[in-house]
Length: 300
Image (cartoon, rainbow, N blue to C red; front, side):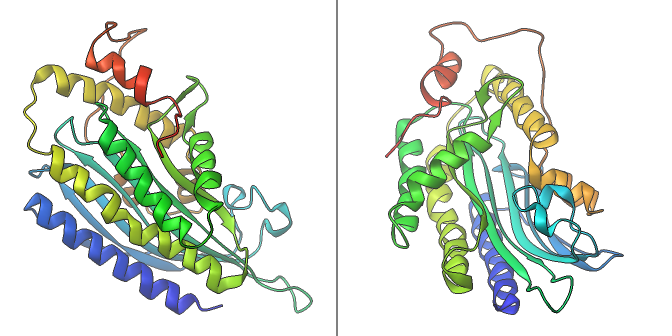
């Protein structure tokens, strides 16, 4: 097991994503380094009110603690309460143009320290990416999923269908019985094949991100839009907020572990709207989003 190699990879991943998104946007991500009193810290790269991105956060963290929070040990209760170490890169990009989808990506590495000499450290990787469009385009959805499939197929042809299904199940708003977006891939508690293979899966996801998302930004960011499209985007962003605050395990872990609130909530959109018992008129592009795209369908 080589945590130093994971940390170096994650820092390079953060830098490469920021560099590419700055080239697309024309603006600059601020750099905000922070320390955590209990141990560790991170680097937050954030952009707000810019040309392409209304808000974007590409966040690196490497933190330590004495008692693993329950949200991190949900699948392995035998390690609950152990001293722990976690590192990862998490990003959410909220574009200004409603025709450009919001995107989320996360890759992370956990170590649960052995409580005594008779036990061994437990480790696992997790991560994934998912796309949340406001207007549906078949070519964008197919492209996003195809890049993910190709990346995971290089390791194991079973991974994409397995983790696509897991993504659809995870990013599900239970209180509304609807998906958050068109999905992608999601995995957690992964340690199959030992450290090197598990680390390779993390890299496969991280390295695929820009290929999956940047071409969609370039294709849609100059599409004309007006008040109607912006109003719909803000309404759908409300669903994003609901998922992150009510269901997302990453948000829960950050808050439960005493993480830095500013970084945890950098995933929130700068603006969002809610309406009472409202749905778009049938036959409109807005209605087509949920009817034809945000429905858990297969794309490749």
